[in-house]
Length: 92
Image (cartoon, rainbow, N blue to C red; front, top):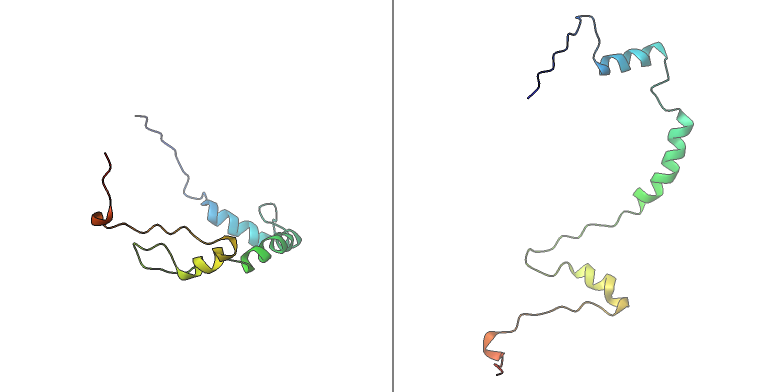
């Protein structure tokens, strides 16, 4: 185990205090320009607007009814059902 000691002077600002101070003084070196933010939102906004809805369903089921409608065009789901033991035939 290693002990690391660091002496901090009482007048040293925390990183957050320094960031706020830079903003108040107009120092933009740690900030993104408005045109860059707008360009990023042009990319991200359409993705956020097309979010897939969340459909709740009961535990221990194969999922919501909406899933059946979504996959119906591709042939539907193979929904395995448990087979009661008495219908199983033993082979030797």
